[in-house]
Image (tube, rainbow, N blue to C red; front, side, top):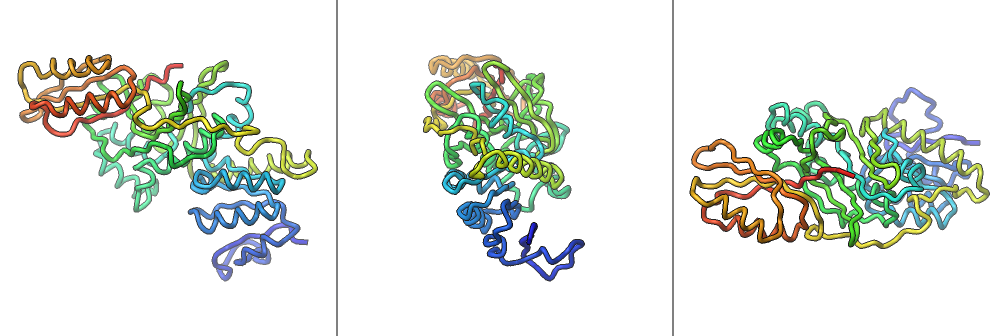
Length: 396
């Protein structure tokens, strides 16, 4: 009776274990009735997605570390698991070894969660940390690639796609909404300059690439973007390739989950934890489906996902102005007429013939900020593109 099989791409490769368990034919796994549980760690979307669908349809429990598959078609996979009385677990898909999905699914189920904020991509966090230490964006990225933190094509990491996949999963488990990757507003770090990192530090902030899922009055905000956060916040001091997720709940308040968000060891740790949970859980049920809902809630709700223009946040604004009388007054007048409150203004030393002006604002709906910045950009004394970085105090 076969108790264990391993699907590989090259069956002829030498291995340090019993090769009798190795196969390059997926059907050997799918049709083996002695196999109840399959772990998928292939990477990429295909063929892993089709494999998982077939396995669930055949009543086999599946554990995956694949955030792309869960974010893109997890709703369908969860439904397949339910229809076939089996389980789909994916703790390792978000922040690897940091146990963050289980608290959302189990420990915090008695809470009403208002916000989940995460540094959930180690590559972008490493680059921003290096820029705080004096590196340019390009140099920091090159070093990350040399160290193996960034891929030769770093787009998924630095442009926020990887973080958006993870945020999709976090938001679903936190708020009981369907997985909706296509509705996550996503912005990368490739336009962040050492100049803005320096100015933010002078104002008592650090720039982090955050994934934010927030329960607002009219719906749910799902956004990934560079963000100024106060340097006294614990999450602001998460450096290098480390990950952290901050969860805001109504009774317990803020809880922070920190650790290694990638790597073979942390990922394996989360996968093994899922194996143990599945074995424990299904042993108490006759149908093998387990007792814990796959996405934390018995039934999901279709709360609206807000567009970028409907989101509310504070802002860091940097503009370069000619040294003319009345420029700052014109800028502040435009902001005031738009109902935008100014929290701080800092005029920097002249750069060539222009004066950099940095403004921090209180939270405002983004559509109003769009209108105000368009008017400021049109002022004759403003030179170059205005820099806008969102700002979050992360207060409860």
